Image 1 (tube, helix red, strand yellow):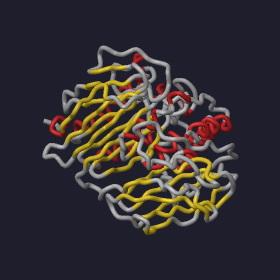
Image 2: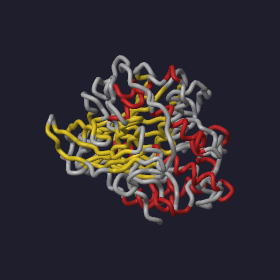
Image 3: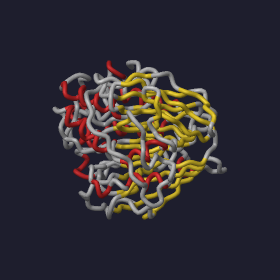
Image 4: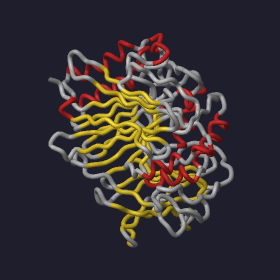
Length: 445
């Protein structure tokens, strides 16, 4: 497979064009952590961000968009003492004023604050954002990860980001329909949609202290129910859409880079591995594929090699065979490839697999029986901020569509029988439903 494009040191600053005015921060909603982002006075030079990503035991990466061409540097503090700093990176007009700075040399599982310097001047004000490094790889740990899709920009519902932040997740997974652009032919319009979201103070507070990982779905990549096809570079619009996507997120890598574009990637937190799949760029149902050959090879090899307690397979669309539209816009449309992935789990006796998805405007739990392995469970949530609602499904173990919702995974691998609890949480912070799975339930008998 083509060499992947890595965050910070390798991608440095990502591609783009010019930006518009900065939206000043406002007081956090009730329940939001007060140190998630400065309430006011973000300083000079910073238009959007910082966005935390690429979280590791010894460091993290920090994405920003400046309001001019500038040198960017991140300084991390242990208390009031500088602990480490990034190399300087340059935000230029040719790259839409974005930069990703990587800081290494930190201690595992340790709280820090940080400052963003734009041309040597603080851009975050007096109250520095906080974050915590990941524990050592493979360590037993208790932590939370939020996820969801369906985040159409609706100002009245942007408070959802403060609600998510109040749960203090280590990471948040954006699983597609993150913006609802639907203009694959217009990179300028795509960028405007990103600006609008990134400049919301609620969003900035969340992403400043919560590591973000993102893939797209149809409304971010192209238009409704779209498929990119097997050619990496045709139609040409999909390459441009990919470049805009890369500008605006902070992933560890983006598919196979320039030679094999895509947004798939993987990462680990403690003893949980996450596999974020791209079900649009190479989708071709006439050729029986959701992933395309390169990504499928990547997924099968990574999954087989994983020794983590839990393995999370995330998709922008549903895994279940009982998906809406008769499977015409889900894994049900590529039954042979779907079986190839799931049968690997059976054959190799890969324990601890959890399926995540988004796309349908509700939150739900599905059980997928596997006669030659253990039953798989799929957690779906895709009504973060949008108003449009899809009907619930009686075939699911649980299905709910009232109001705005996100999914929350609570891992506890310190237990003798490690467990993960899935919660459906509404915009008010109320748990609508929960389900706990023990690792012993996710093992081949």
